[in-house]
Image 1 (cartoon, rainbow, N blue to C red):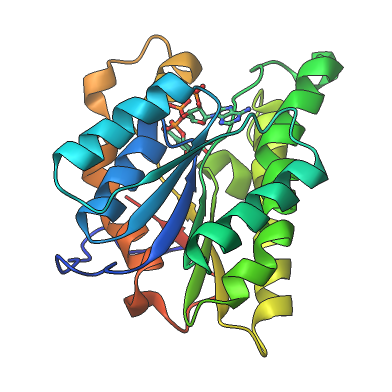
Image 2 (cartoon, protein in one colour):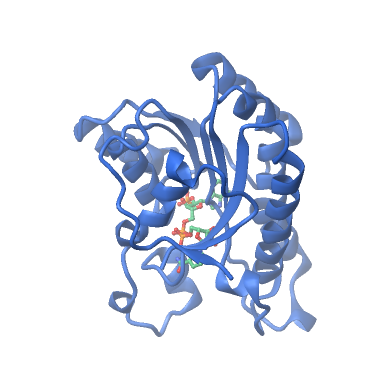
Length: 250
Ligand code: NAP
């Protein structure tokens, strides 16, 4: 059974002095998470493919007087294992450790019957949603191990927890992410400070949601800023001891 932390109350300095990397930080849930982590004291590394969007979030965090973030432009679709290693080396050089890693970036691909799925799109979805978080976690193990209390969070979806018609590569990638989370958690539980969990944001008002449900009234879903309690819980010390678990943000 997934654990709900939607009513968690984060204290203002919950993430003070933590270094947290957020993928897909330029928009949607990733942008809200980056701003929320910064507002609770974290130094956030904003990773994404559109530099302009990352700069906007950077400016908002700076204008709010929160710890100065960093920008790391990276297209996860084309990123090689060496690119991920380069990212980890940069983090180590600039910050010395990594306390949090939120794997948030993903793409929807096509909503079509499995029998008709376009294989080029299949490859892109698997690359961004599954291979990239795998390679990034693997590359960052060393710098995560430098933390006293490191939290890795994979982003799932309802369709990753139970298969649903037409969700194709997206649903399969999210189911695989859940399994990968459990393997990492099991392997890292002994002898490392790294805990690994997954979060299902639930229906949230973002551009991905609009693409998936074009006929839906966007106002029927909460804004990303309204679902941050579970994200804060997972990134902060209160979730110490939880690993290999599934969380719901709503
Ligand atoms: P979104 O609005 O589409 O945002 C996705 C983010 O990922 C964007 O910042 C995007 O950057 C980035 N991204 C996509 N492809 C990338 C690539 N190749 N390299 C680097 N960054 C890339 O989606 P969202 O709704 O906020 O979703 C966030 C997470 O929650 C996803 O993992 C999604 O599967 C999950 N989720 C969302 C919902 C929901 O209702 N919204 C429900 C269940 C699960 P650009 O803006 O530059 O393209």
